[in-house]
Image (cartoon, rainbow over all chains, first blue to last red):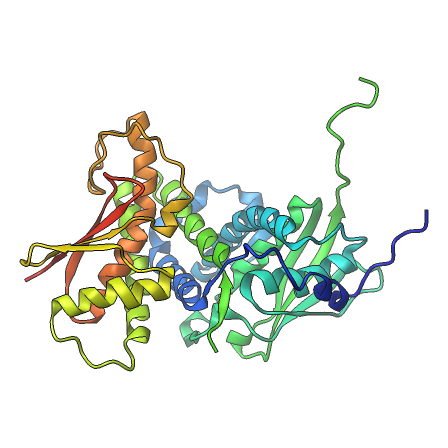
Length: 216
Length: 176
């Protein structure tokens, strides 16, 4: 059987324009302000949670924030963790409500995240660029980002990855569909760049395991 | 143009925030977790009420401000109004929401009869654990209300009353 050709992001989005009408939306301000308050509170509390951080799996910390063990680095870590936990649940809702069929390859996956997923949840579409030759690494570029409405980073917090929750969400969601990925920030509009650019690198595609043995 | 995000975004963010503070940061100190969650709500409430009252004149008295919370503010945030408002005319108001959206999807054990108010931190029995989890989530909207009123010049204390689920009441006590 001939393999199904991957569809472009626009084609996918056009197809599912009429999403399941029980999809509910909400004023984004509550979302933006809540996220901002969480970041601020974490920055304030971090001195007291140092003990908790020490209990975290060391390897996990290294994997997430490399050499940046400053307070702002730790806030970034927490956001990725929070994002990860959110992502592993959001993927279920996404798959249930978007009527998107299985993606043929990682290229299609990235397009779906950028054009459908982000649109459904935070109401913005992103573009996918900078593919590497093997098709395992790309950049998702957001020009618009509701998380940062009304936000300005003061000079003392230039080390903070304010939107780190997004990278966790994407990583968590991909993990649940058997793709291990690494998601890092390349450009951050809050720190002076013109857009938000996330690099998504597919590390491993774990084939889904059929839970039952065939001969039983 | 009013920007919109999906409802599940706010729900997930809030759930994860409560889980983070209760289970990771302050795992055995529910009072501290509660205070932090309420503080986050306070910030949000202040900012929201600032934005939603930009074009309005000041409120004449406390009752006007509380009515604003019950109608306009609640509509902007939850897309519905407070269902019932009671007061003792001496600084205490009870805002009752018969179907509070953030509680609507929480399962609850109907046999909880030792739950009266959020301030009860005593030893968690099986029934009150569910109640305690629920009350942790309620610190956030309590903080929002407190922050909103505080921004309108009304210092107060806000607590949640879940003794008659699925209705949820917020008790506002204005500080003299």
